[in-house]
Structure formats: structure tokens, C-alpha cells
Image 1 (tube, rainbow over the protein chains, first blue to last red):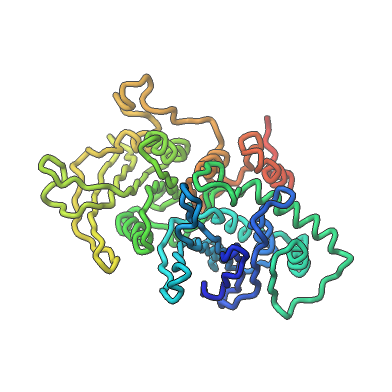
Image 2 (image 1 turned 90 degrees about the horizontal axis):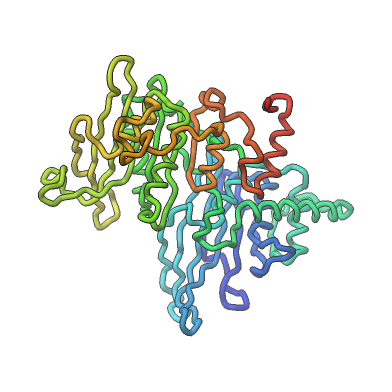
Length: 217
Length: 236
């Protein structure tokens, strides 16, 4: 997928987190630019985005997280990069997880190509989160309701034009369920915690053919 | 279906490690258990930014499921650094600095278990491609993981293992069911896969006891248990 589509028009001149869901053919069906990185009711924006990935039942999710490297002394931003994590459900049920770090060029050299470096998928903060939502499908809410709820919380959602219209009578219930699911995901995976956090579980992905994850949770 | 057979273990391990090297990543240690010439369980070690602090613990985590299940055979694949100085065991023959070490052990009905290992050295050229260089067999009945593998395959620690501790190395039987053990290891960052036919035979379909899981996972453990209550109630 093309990182260049992701515009840099946030108020700090820096992209917010971005989630794209696509079907098996590679056609993108949902695109969400996350709201600002402040927790709302204790839930971070990445966990809220993940609910859409679980409900939409699409086999491929890509999450881009902005990474700023600051100078500790004077607090200036030294370099900016995007951590791209892609989780794909393979036809035999296994999950494939890749992560790479894309170093963005400095603003005055905007025509330099971005350089990509592979990263161990376990270092990605959303790796286990994406694997979890792709493996466990929540069927209690409809996908158009989740998109409407996320948009009402400040996310910038672009959806498939073929989606049915939202039944507004069901929206309160959907809001409650999406919040509860996102809250559970946030506590289990801690996607906003620091990189060395030992309480984040491993992602049961990238298993060789013929094996399936041992632990159902 | 595509589970590696015991005869193909070496080429399978090379291909598996090659996947990580081709992606530009450092491979991680892998434990593979075998029953009846077929692989049954796959454990990939955790990513540890500072392994020197808890190296002993990391090896115990990798072998924990092997000690609990006592399979017929086991294979360990680890990235190794090959010594090329004068008194190193692989000196002279191996030119590369990086290597893939494999060590295996298989239980036999009569006599001591069959034990062996190889080291494949490789290098990475300027284009980032992996060049395989050399294949060196470990001397017979010698290897850095011989004690741990003996404990996996036979269920007993060899005499004198574990630095003279009473009873050998670490406690082999933790008293946990395999599902709870797999859950705990996953929470420590290990990735565990079971071959399709062995999920129930090893007991991984039993529910994880909510007392063994993290508080944030307890709700899901309880829901999974009650959803399948007819089959999964454990007698106490």
C-alpha cells in the first residue's frame, strides 16, 4: 500500500495513526484516520480502530503509527518515521504479520524517497492487537454502525459507498458495545504502552504451514 | 499437511530460518517436537532486547512445553555466532561469522537417545541476499543443549546436569495443564503452534483456568469456558 496517500496535514505537521482494511484482492474498503492520541474514557484511539477491523471481517488490516524521535535536551523532533504493521489472514486460517519502519524525509527535502527498514513484528505495538481482532470476529454490531460510532468520536472515516444506511435507533447500543470491546482490547494488548512492556502478549502469527496457535485466548 | 517430517528436519529448519533472514530480520530460537516422525509442536522464542540479563530464563521458557509433554524427539534451531579463532571447535572450516545451529535428540527403545547437530554458516552480501557457506557437524554426543534435550526426550535430567543442583536442572514438571502453560508462555512473548492433529491429543483444547491468566484476560477465559461448559468443565 502507498504511504504517500496518507497526508501530513495534522496540526503538528505529522500524521495521526491510520488504519486501512482491504479484502483479499487488495481493494481498500475502509480507511480511518484516527483522532488525536488522547485517551477517551481510558480507551486509546488504536483500540477503537481495531474494533472496526474485527467487525468488518476483512482479511487484511494495515495500521500506520507515527513515530517521532525527540532530542532529550531541547525537545526538538530529530526524525520522523511511520511504523507500518500489516496483518493478513491466509486462506488456511494462519495469520501473517509484517512490520516495517518508513523513515520520512525532512520537510525541506520532501522529494527524497522514503527509506523502508524491516522491523521484527513483535516490536510493533499493534501486532498482537491486529492478530486478535482478525482471529476473533465480533458479530454483535453491524459494520456501518461501528463506522458511524467512530466518526462521532472524532475519527475521520472513509467507508465503502455500498454500505447500507445506519439505523439511528440502534446507535446508542452500538456505541456502548464498541466502547466495551475497545476497552477490553486496550487492557489486553496495551497498544499505547512503551515498547519494552512485558505485559503485551506475543502475536500468534507467522507460524509455519500446518501449525495453528496453541492458545485460544 | 505441510508439517515437517523427521527426515526433512534440516532442510525445513534452513527454509524456516531463511524466511526471517530474507525479510531482513534476526531469526529467533525455535523448538520443534516430533512424534512418530511428524512434527507436532512449534515454539518460537521471545524477542529479548537484552538477552544477557536473563539468558537462563529464556532457555527454560523455550523448553518448558517440551519438558511438560515429553515427546519422542526434539529439534532446536538457534542463531549462533561461529568462533573462528584458533581453538574454536569450528575454526578453520567455517569462515562465516553467523550461523544457524541445529541440535536434535530422539528417544530409542534400547539404549541412550540418538543425538546430533549441525551448524550452517552463512553471510549476507551487499545486496542483502543470504549466502550459505558451510555445513559442519557437531562431534558425536556433544552439544551445548544436550542436557536440556535429554530432559525433554526422556523426562529425566542426566547425572551432573544443572551445575550440580540437586535433582538436575530446573523443575521439569510445572504442574500446569498444557493449555495454561501455552497461555503463560505466550504472555511472556513466545509463539506456540500445534500441528492440526495434535491439538486434542496434547490437551490444548482444555480451557485455560481463569486463575492462571492475567486479570485482563480473565473475562475472556471465563466466557470461553462457559460457552463450552458441557465439554469443558473440569472435575476437582
